[in-house]
Image 1: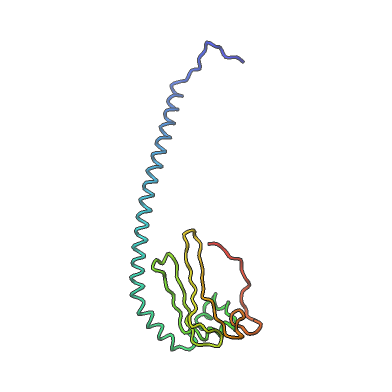
Image 2 (image 1 turned 90 degrees about the horizontal axis):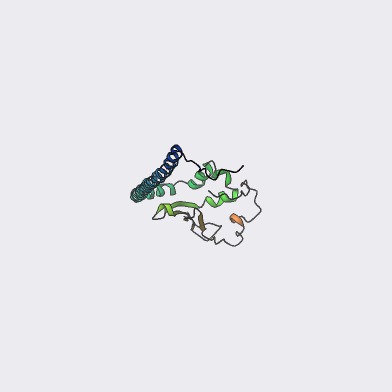
Length: 188
């Protein structure tokens, strides 16, 4: 089929109006999205400011709590096997402690959790031990540092085991504990 050379394709007024309307809708849509992004940026700025203020308040109250925690810690030291009992009573941790672990935890005198200046960056846990037959250290620290890419860097004190106690968890003999099997690490 050949079109007549003399005939021009007619574009109706309705087609022109629809095309112009479509261009107008695209332009309006782009403007709306730009305005929406501006508002979202404004909200993010406010949320960051709120987060900074919350952090300031948390830091202030952490300082206020410190003497109270110190008083509590002194009383805890007078309770025999407090930390061992606390860990064994915890629904998840109690399942993890072997008999050898329990012998070591009998020597735990205090536990301190210290947030970094910016709590969003991480924290450390220090286990303070009385002199014991398992290792030389009186302080063992584990530090959790939250990195920008969403991962956590974990560092810990190397334990200076006493002679004959250098097997895992200080056991000088084969373990018969009820520790859970190694689970594959998960990224959160």
